[in-house]
Figure 1: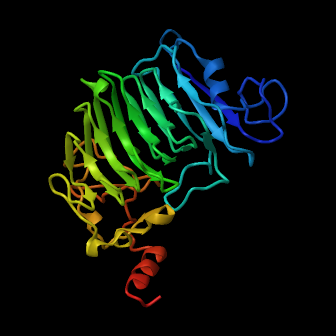
Figure 2: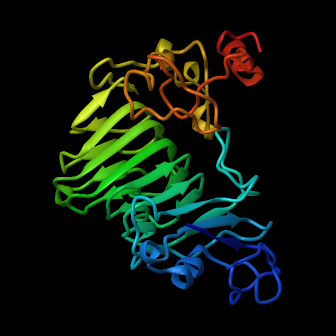
Figure 3: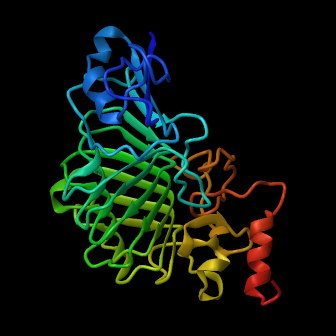
Length: 338
């Protein structure tokens, strides 16, 4: 088995037409210019080849990648899978949206930035923003999908995560879904439609902020655990099938938590400005750990270990060495000291 590693590089000195075998910006081996170009050129039967495919995305200090992608037409299997992730120092981070890192973003109505139409696809660590008021971040349209460590912005009535295909299966973990423009009517951070019957969608250890509904499940398919869904206009979890060990303003679900002192900054450093670093003394420390639920990710968004029967709600597991300086400063501000 071999890994077919290819690069995407958004450097202003790059252009379409390379074969992606290097991260360079000149010559026949130069990187692909868009993720869509990578998908179109690399689409193949991985099972017959006995291979895996990996696309590494790099900002190259250039512009956002502005082409939508439908991962379709591949033949994959449990050992012959696809992975899409950022190159080193291009990963989404807990503290902010970072324009110096790789971003997949354009303005297109009712179309996903990434549609997963092939089984056994993993997407890690990307920053994604569909700028359209009815835009979609991810569309879940196949089986055995994993979305890990992503940060997705939404505009207007847009949905960062959308599922409408029957019998699909997906896990979304260590995620941040943020409504960007304050015009929230009809928006859901996660929306599973009624046509997704028979599906199993697992959302674990994520943050949803500022939507009309944080998550809406019309397909009886969605399980949310260790998810913080806050600052939403209508409902934090609307008809979601299973809500357990989650933080919300309205205290939805079993083993429910609400923000300490009714303040979001007692749970995260500055969620209104997209910093979802955990405040170690908040109620988000009352989640469920991987030793009690095998679907809880063993690592957080930054690669820190979650262990034991208890874990933090959200994308961040504070380091065992103690509380970070940003967290301490946040606590002092809440007390009127700093």
